[in-house]
Image 1 (cartoon, rainbow, N blue to C red):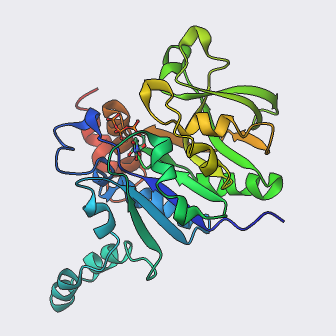
Image 2: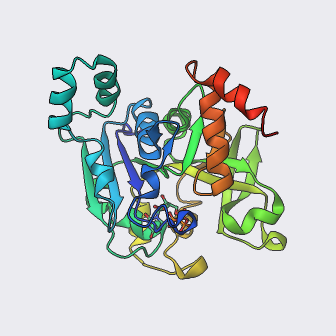
Image 3: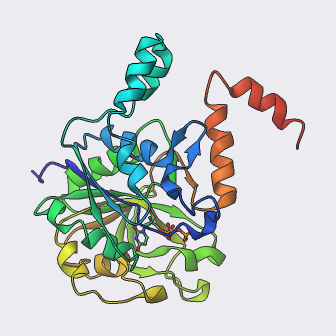
Length: 289
Ligand code: UTP
């Protein structure tokens, strides 16, 4: 029986340069899709998979991310006084059990791998999930839950994967693929941001991972990879062959909300799923397309 999966690390210390000037004073992960910030979608997805402990890896100007899950005492009191029950119910969706959220600081954004290493005390000897909140998922079953089921069967590392156009491989961590049953893929190698002509496949890692704690030791070598950054992919690659390693094509859709077009598409897709908005959105979309 593999150790139960109860922890998640959410790295949110990136600079968010693609969303400047919006992200000058506001964390990218606080940008809302319809009416909920990206960070809350990620936390809800993890909780739906039974995750109980959260560690945000934050940086300068990111305190709102932690505050979002705190009690807003004055606001709650005012809403209660005014009998705003609907607003109170919305506020309640951000409530977390005491002690379940912690944050660590990545003072300088040296890369995703370095951000994960910053959470080493939180991870300890336990398996953990990683969620990059700017990958937003629309699915019937939480992607972390889908990955957790594979982890329970294999006891090893598992990442969400998706086919990308070959001309985009240099934006992603790309898999070298062993056995592939169309859903679950055996990972035999990993390359971060390969040129299209050098990519071993077009199957790329999406921002959901379940990893064994040994990856932290590999990250502690502080080796610089693509873009001069300490890359998580490189540390994971060194574990292949020593631990089970799989990719899972999860069921559902992923939106790259770190990118403007992906973010706008997510707004439309999520709004069309909302009974209070779908008709209005469909009606106005017709005026533009
Ligand atoms: P991105 O590659 O999207 O970088 O990071 P970014 O800085 O957030 O955005 P752009 O490209 O400048 O617009 C992927 C994830 O890794 C985190 C980010 O917060 C994001 O969740 N990250 C990246 C860190 O926490 N620390 C880093 O040093 C780098």
